[in-house]
Length: 305
Ligand SMILES: [Zn+2]
Image 1: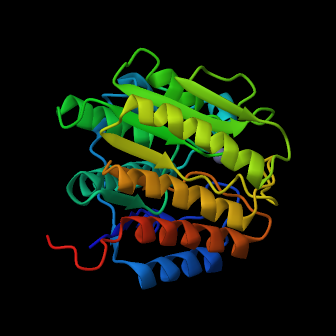
Image 2: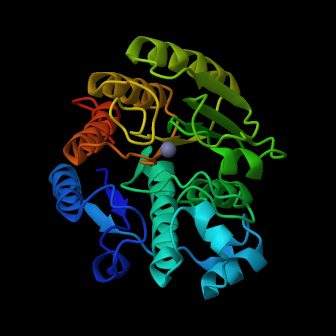
């Protein structure tokens, strides 16, 4: 019944050297794709049409990035040098999130095996993020009149600064970010709710903060949730500062998916960050997240459609 979209199979991934630091070496990416394909159908994502990106991002900014007319400073802020694959991957990843959004609205659960580039602002790239996939998909369904209250539940260890900035004046979107206080971005934006965690926060502290987040989320009564299921909260992540265990991560995911499933709130799940020192652990975490999603949304035996 459910399926996942991915931009990982795109030619840009296969034919060009990765533009970013190799956080997930090729053999581990293969293991992730194979593990996912054992669980559910894996579909290649169509490209996002540029016109939809323009509803969130400044057209002049998009035009410059499309043509590669970016400065060194902009590449430094992004975290890697521009090449055509940066644009191709960005469009593919946004297309996967948008496709997952249609799935969520029709089946309850939509999945993108990547996505969650939440540091992209309307007019500037930052932190591995050139296009803000969740903002683009959220804006599209709002513009289309399909929903009128969207929750962005950002549990990546880094604050969703680009998303917070893009939706600062948008009352129909509730931005909620649960993140490490002393981590990037060091100049934070104001989300509708920010919950900050101290360095080395473990499972108990993390899950307690999640409960507070879900109380606020429930009060907003969203009609659609975008869940950024960042694995960079894990102990051993190179870019996180928290100490959540794999079991803690499982508990987090089960709580979030279970909440959405039990309240019949459609949910779009994107993977967001994950930079574990041990890539095998990251693959395990990602597959565990998929299992939590499928477990929560699987219809109870005997359900008739
Ligand atoms: Zn992150």
